[in-house]
Image (cartoon, rainbow, N blue to C red; front, side, top):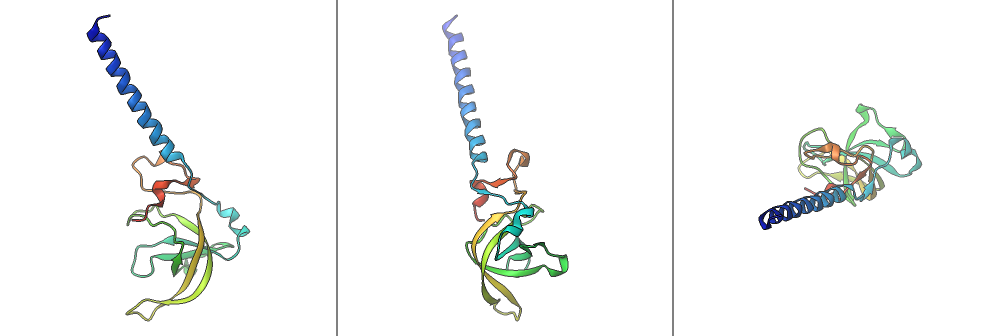
Length: 156
């Protein structure tokens, strides 16, 4: 083989190895579990919990959609105020809203300034996503639905 051909083959192999390393790092970073999801059937095993989801309207930013008995009827869903170990929020818009099981302590009532509306005020002790975990990603099928990864925990 000529020297020029060897250099071309070496450069090709170098690019292939670099691409492989980048691909492996991407796969590992999207597959490392940080927070495992709980199935809705298992919610009844927990006490002093609420099911919440993020909402995008004027108010507290969170609504209670259930408790340890499961999901509420639509008429029973209400806004709640959260403090403590609050679950991560997502970018505004879309229909990819995760539901979280939160172990809580009731702190009383919360009053939004310049409003006469009062909301239940909960201190979140611990939270877990409810299966399936959804996310805003270019290729959502690449990401696991049974747990959250590091990029899911970024607060916007």
